[in-house]
Length: 102
Image (cartoon, rainbow, N blue to C red; front, side, top):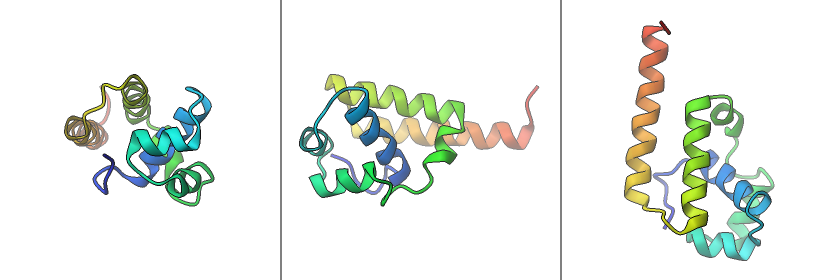
């Protein structure tokens, strides 16, 4: 389900949210995300996904990741749409920074 199109930092945030907020086990997260339990452990422990703070410090991206996590937890996740949404949010953020806020 998850592939390299979703940045490691996003996967790390989602993993932590599913474990801490939604009460999933590492095995359940692995199954839901289509990754190994070892990868879940690495995301949770910060071995993977080093730029988590950059995403969490951005309100738009942080909100997007929280919505995506809720979709994953509810079973309504579609990877293709998530990739498009991530690109759109990132492009908006970059454009806003270039233009400045009004």
